[in-house]
Length: 189
Image 1 (cartoon, rainbow, N blue to C red):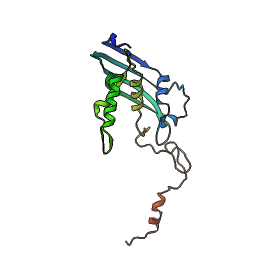
Image 2 (image 1 turned 180 degrees about the vertical axis):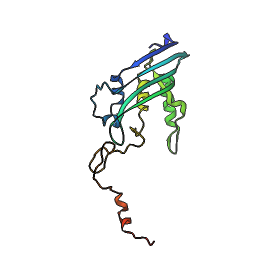
Image 3 (image 1 turned 90 degrees about the horizontal axis):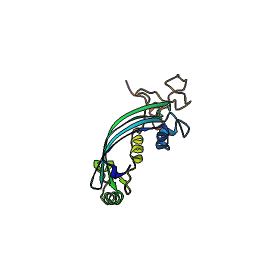
Image 4 (image 1 turned 90 degrees about the vertical axis):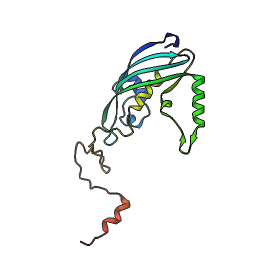
């Protein structure tokens, strides 16, 4: 989309092929063993109003969608839905690079200091605004660190690998080997 065409409202349907590409390399996606062009990777819809002030382009809207990833306990497929409001600023590439360099220079004891406003900044070249990095980021952020199929997911047996949500196994519970010596302790009654 071109800056000179602003203001404009964009409504985009996001296909599964884009989602599969955006999530490629994420552990919880790769654990499914799905093909690269998985038609069940997920999908979404972006509705975004864009307007310009000087060389800055502002976007406000909403993205909804879903992704399919593996449960972090049982590795079964999980469908995660999301519905997020978006507030984003696009800066000319030179200005974006300067802001990024200034942020890199502001290092405290724990590393680079990033403010909330910095999270929704994107650069653009010339007259063209590319929405792909924004959309890609939203799908990646929709995947939590440890997605679960259910809060009470029993996971896989660490000994035989059976899915404990579907069947029971005869394996004895293995405790932490570092605590094995405590089992021999006898306490007076």
